[in-house]
Length: 294
Picture 1 (cartoon, rainbow, N blue to C red):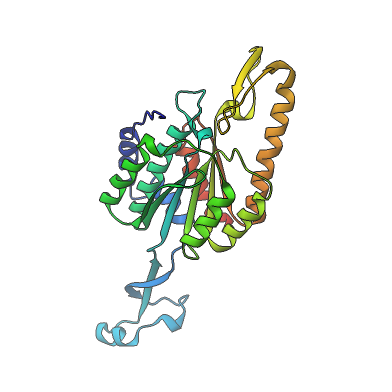
Picture 2: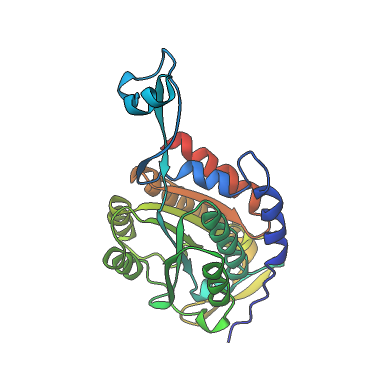
């Protein structure tokens, strides 16, 4: 069974510090500004100024206060966000201090915390070639710790990866307009994956987060002959890393470019992260930047 080494305390401490600020918090503020709510709901009154839309004047309130007042509205949140975590075998690999699964688990925990702070409901789906664990979207700190418990359980990790099956599952399971945040290394995609992504992007607000190990994209120099194992089939292969390093890097660069393009073409969003680098700042910058794209 895969062993997970997770530490959520630094994440919670850092998020607590940022969410106490009046300005946009580290992840909560970025997330909040990038994901639109369902509509508008009444918030308060304020005095009319010439630049205001006259249709927003509340005449009854104006008579009572003897001032011309307009209605102020705020965005109605109550969104449903589902964090979909790839728990297939390729995610269990790591050449840095953390495996992709460990890095992704802590990332998912941070994002869930931000979503709940923003006042939205968050749920969890852990998926390989099937649903390994699922928590319905809900609010509150209890929901957060329920999610942490599932994310931390090694019994849900390892297995094959089936992107088409996952897209079919979420399409049948979740309602239109749900925000889907899919965290994966995107290794093991099969022919036709672009069409599956296209369908998901049409129905959902689909956000992809690619979590890659440095060795997923390139090979370090001077390592000579190596033996690698396919995480899904277990088959082993020996090769000279120096001989194939250039081709290996090129293939992966082309794949990552095609992944980015597929999301862009379907009006989705994707963030690329590496396990060798902290995710907090880059994730926050990504969510803030999404406000400009949308």
